[in-house]
Image (tube, rainbow, N blue to C red; front, side, top):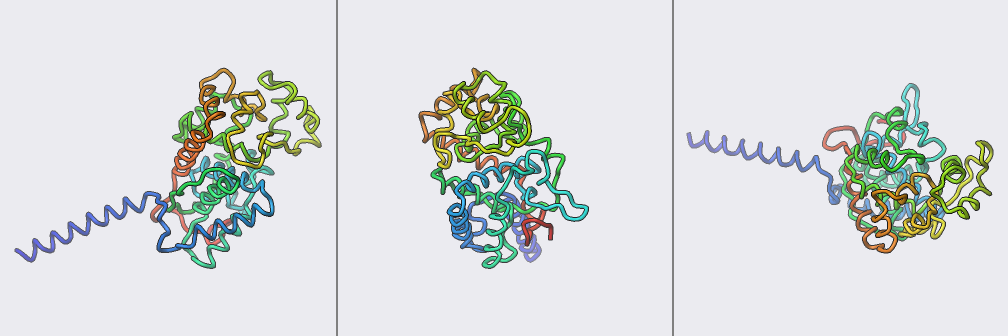
Length: 322
């Protein structure tokens, strides 16, 4: 009997341990690769520095890449998958085609990581780390990125066309869109501050500068010189999302909104007599508050439906399933 009780207790203890381990494994943690790939952070940072030295704008592009990944199927690296044979990825979706960029930087980081830690680190986690470093290297805050995501073996062109907010969206639509992903209105406004860096194409701000009234007239007139009123040759011409400090991550974007100098209709909707006006004003004068809320929102966004445990896979190549 004593022997049976001993084995019974040992079995129960093992079951409890496995249940605990399984639960822990299903959660993201900044230390996920501490023993399996301890050089990961240094590899990502070094590759990102090289990428930004070649093109400073790339930091903004990789923050946007992370956003577009997480809003479609969750933060699973699905946006990286190429169209191969009958497989259709998300790169050709309306919000992504000829717009989302930085795939070659993720490919390079992945290749560098594979040299040191083959088959260990997911592409989804690399995208999350690149977004953090893109922010930090352009003057923004840094944070401990929760890790442990795995890569999707699927993609959804349909969701990429339906789940990504439009630059023509109104405030109520934007709030609803973010709420559907578990993000609050505060998260939405803070995340919009990523537009402190980067550029937008004329086709995405044309309607705002020609048709809207919630815009500084002189600002609109200046932009019209580079963006014709009708679709055509100027569609891909770029304008900075933050005219004040276009390649530095700071809170100037919110000051621009207060002055009615938001480039996109969706930008200016954050300061247009609605529920986010007070927060925009706070962010415009309190960079510490903005940085804190931005970090909180980035971590929350990075927790949108990640694949963990045995779900998905660790892709050997960013652009295709193993």
